[in-house]
Image 1 (cartoon, rainbow, N blue to C red):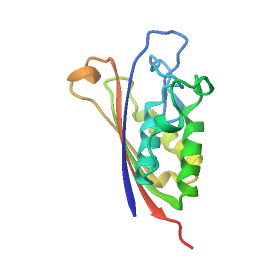
Image 2 (image 1 turned 90 degrees about the vertical axis):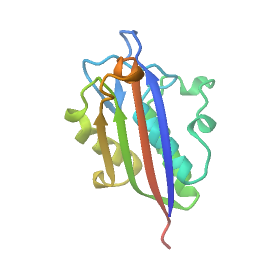
Image 3 (image 1 turned 30 degrees about the vertical axis):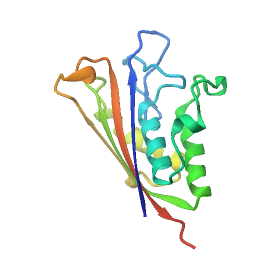
Length: 161
């Protein structure tokens, strides 16, 4: 059994062309998040949790923000590769638990869709994914509505022969 923790933070951008993508789902009416890829802070934290549990490094090792191949890429494509790397190392995802810290956008209406998208990408059931959202009660950069912070924990188990 292996446990990994991932954390990621992205600032909101004022770019009107940038959409907000969280957990693989476009969140309408919200400012987009800055980033080399699509800025999906939820997926990035999950990637680091999976990689950490498998002791395979971090997301920046696999997908450096200096590589133009990953410019504006959908982060779910990155997650597909991360899951494949973990499986190649002999691990299977047991469950993923995610906490999103955000004053905005309101995520409750989108959590079910996020779980469905992430389950499909990771090849697991939605019942193996928990996503919770909370505010910081107006404190810090999250409270000032400057960005979003995400923590993710992943449990991996060795592939059963």
